[in-house]
Length: 165
Image (cartoon, rainbow, N blue to C red):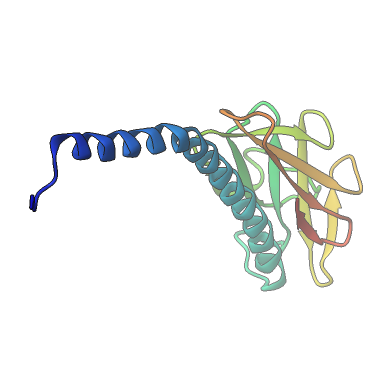
């Protein structure tokens, strides 16, 4: 009796492994893109909550305790966390204090905003009160560059409720 594997048996096993790899490879890339999109949407929601908590904790870099998030359609790769030092409810470069500029994950971009050009979501203590530039609700839609039909939407309403769809 032969106790080893024949060359034909080894080739059949290798062929089966190659076929399974070829079948699953496209799904892996799509799943990876979806994961990056989900992580970016979750990070965006966490950053909005961070700004809200910063407002409630009365932590500030200037004499006011108003903090916000700025989104610009011209800058589709990132968004800005800031302290609204002049209390106008908008991000003003040079006047307001930059907390952090956050880049989206590779392959993820901002697709659309509720209002054209930009959105500023600013929280005012103590309630907190929310102001959204140009609207009662801020909606930011992000998408995967490789799979443009895959999108996630982050919404902030007038009472500060953050929803990720």
